[in-house]
Image 1 (cartoon, rainbow, N blue to C red):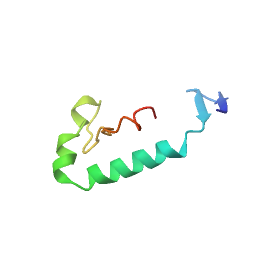
Image 2 (cartoon, rainbow, N blue to C red):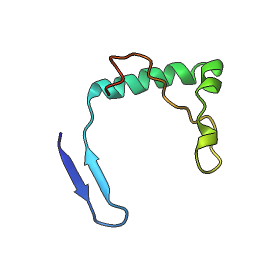
Image 3 (cartoon, helix red, strand yellow):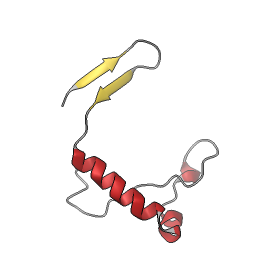
Image 4 (cartoon, rainbow, N blue to C red):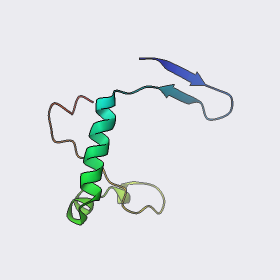
Length: 69
């Protein structure tokens, strides 16, 4: 896995790559949860975040095969 650190200004930024499988999991699960009012309410993570945020969900990964990502 390639990693590049950018320290041009503060804060330091890490540029890296992630597996396409990870992106697919996040997109599919996110779309499913955000498309359902019931699941959006069940997985709403807004109260655990700083600031006034709305409908920020935790991505529920229920498949054991996907949890490694």
